[in-house]
Amino acid sequence: MAVILKAVDIEKTYGKGQLKVEALKSTNLEIEEGVFHAIIGKSGSGKSTLLHILGGLDKPTCGKLYLENESVFDLKDKELAILRRRRIGFVFQSFNLLQEHTVVENILMPIHLDSREVDEEHFNKVISTLGIGEKLNYYPDELSGGERQRVAIARALVSKPAIILADEPTGNLDEKTGDEVIKLIKDLAKEFNQTIVLVTHDLEIAQNADRVITLIDGEISSVIDNSDSQKI
Ligand SMILES: Nc1ncnc2c1ncn2[C@@H]1O[C@H](COP(=O)(O)OP(=O)(O)OP(=O)(O)O)[C@@H](O)[C@H]1O
Image (tube, rainbow, N blue to C red; front, side):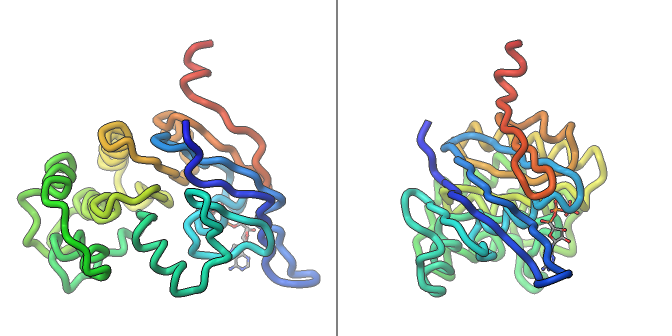
C-alpha cells in the first residue's frame, strides 16, 4: 500500500530548563493509504502532539513530515494553510462547527473558502452515508452530539482529503452514540478508501482500526496490524 504521510525523526519539546517536556522523542511513522490507524497511549504520552504535527497544525522542534512526498514544514505559512484546507480533514472532540451557519454551510465551508466546485455526487454520497440529509438546513445547536459529530465528519470528508485526522472524536458523546460514530468512521474508511488517523485512549475503539500505534512517554512502542493479530 502507498505511504501517504511520512514522519521522519520528528521531535517536539515544550518549554526550557527545568520546565522542559519532551512530548515526542525521535518519531518515525508511515501512514498508508486507505488504512484506518488508531494512536493510543496514556494521558500525556504525546498522542495529541503527534496528531497535531501530522496535520501541520503544530511545528515539530525538529524532523520532517512528507504528505504525498511534499515536505510539509518547508512550506510557507500561507501554503501550509492551503495544504491543510485541501488535503487534510480534521475531526475534533468539540466538533468545531460554526454555530451561526447551517449544517450544509458548515459542511461546504472548506470548499467555499477555496472557491472550488462542489462534487454533487460525492456530497450526496457522504450525506446519505452519514444519514444527515434531513438536517442540512438546521443549525448545530439544534442537533444532538452524535449528529454534530457526523456533520463534522461530513465536513472533513466532502473535500476528498488525502487523510482525515481525528482527535478523540467520541470524547463528548455517550457510549452508544460514540460506538455508532466509530462504526461510521470504520465504514467510511472502507467506502471511500479514506486514510484515517484517530487518537483515542480507549482500547475498544482502537480495536476497530486496521493498525494500532501505541505511544509511551513520547515514543512509539509498537505498531500492530489488527488483521495480523486476528489471524494468530
Ligand atoms: N503547549 C504545551 N506546553 C507545554 N507542555 C505541553 C503542551 N502541550 C502538551 N504538553 C505536554 O506534552 C506532553 C504530551 O501531551 P499530549 O497532549 O500530546 O498528550 P496526550 O497523550 O494527547 O494526552 P491526553 O490523552 O491527556 O490528551 C504532556 O506532558 C503535556 O503536558
